[in-house]
Length: 315
Ligand code: APR
Image 1 (cartoon, rainbow, N blue to C red):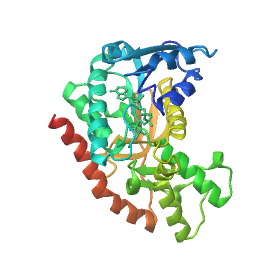
Image 2: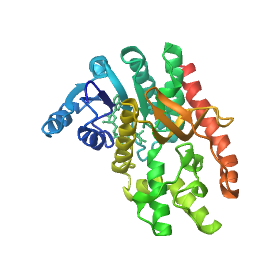
Image 3: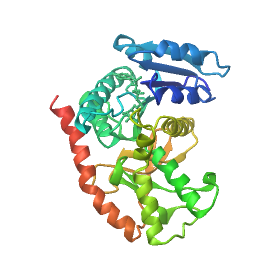
């Protein structure tokens, strides 16, 4: 459609490249703006030969970031470093936190009205970082800042569908909370079709969904984390954002600022419309396992949110 520019920041990376490829196939995009600190030109030239309508433009390095962002309706951020052997979680946090902070400073300046979808981990902290940067810049709109948690939903759909023997495309499991380990809260009791499994099976499925990222890290044996499934999830999520922007409301799970719980940020089901999040759907009723897991995630999620907010305020 006319005049929809989508920027991908970190477009030459393991997630960025397949994400850019999938977005190049979207009829909802008029311009696909690829930005990275290195390698964007090659990715852009390669994708530009595909005979689909989005026009591909590539930008490399901080001096080209303003142009990469200018006029964007949606900015998707997979920029960062994945965890490498020998790197502590704190090392990873400090690098990615700084990257997301700096990119958001630029977004506030050059496309303050854009929707922003954050993939860079730890999402539980990077979304609060973005919020804090936008608040300081005076551009913050909580309805347009979304942490991408859709991969947790895809994983839940896949694993639960396998367990109950239905096609994965028909499965819909809400996943709320945060985007790491025990903060991930799958709601099997609210899935469709109905999931009738023993408490033991529900617990095992929940734990597999929570640990699914590690499953991939282990299988890749030191070479990184989920990239292809993450890119697929992010492309689907971006597509939903663009459909909503075009006037077709759609429900997605995303990590957003909300007042549904006593935590300031919480992934939940949200109805997206032209102006971003238009409705925060109620959490619904939890079963015993879900209620216990909800209580158990609060401490860690609260700590991750505070860590993000503090990072911006002390730098
Ligand atoms: N601006 C833009 N891009 C950057 C910046 C920056 N300041 N710093 C790094 N990048 C780019 C890198 O050049 C690289 O192309 O981000 C890309 C990241 O790609 P990979 O290193 O392959 O990492 P990937 O597996 O894609 O994961 C990226 O997403 O899921 C999260 O935990 C993951 O935080 C990590 C991020």
